[in-house]
Length: 289
Image (cartoon, rainbow, N blue to C red; front, side, top):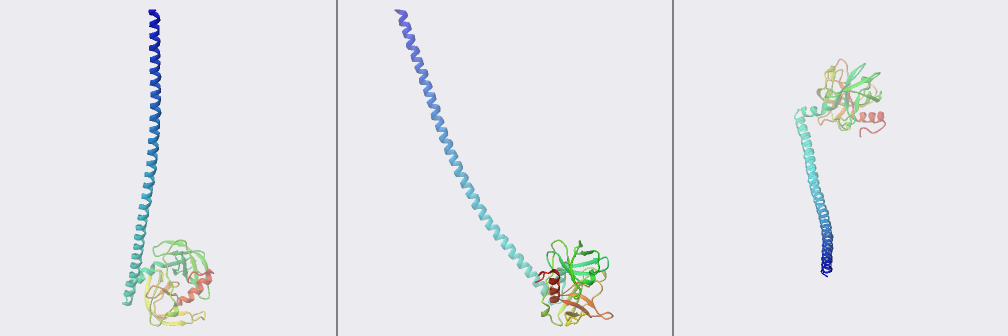
């Protein structure tokens, strides 16, 4: 009887113990599930917060960049305007100096676009008429040349391609590769006798020289029987051929072409309007408007 009571007590204890273990396991599992759900919920909240924060940061950065870009554009426009004002002011200063007989500013700018043209047969002058490197000179400078080289004011030497020539007007068009300073052509129909002009070129190998004079006559007849020449008292020498004759604003009014031998102060330049016609015809396109 006593043994049966002991067995019964042991059985009850085991059942209680098993129940406690089961309850403990259920409690642990429930805790893990609850904790897992809470962690998942926290992760979801954190991810949502992260996305919202990222969007806010991106939006703030976009707005900041937009504001900075607008400020940068304003600064660029201001600097551009100031540069244009400075360039205009500099031109006005040069013109003012030229009216007082000081052509240094005009010559300093214009000579940057003057070139020396040399071949295996002759040498002369020329000038650049476009940013892309078109060069004008006299046809007789490059006549029958095997190779043509052009030296710019900064002493850089380029091999030049002969685009074509107008033998009647003694004009040749060359091309060198690169970006360059260039001279604009004036309207020669607006020229007046007595106006000051400057010849730029390379007389007798003296590179990038300048001589001053006045217009002595207009619409003179040249060796080609065309009345397209400007008569000047500017001193011209061998090597000046093909160089520009400029006015006091730095625009080209003609190409220095020839002088009357044995005389002083009788130089002739092909007027700029005739140059425009000749060059555009040679190139078969409008290079000079």
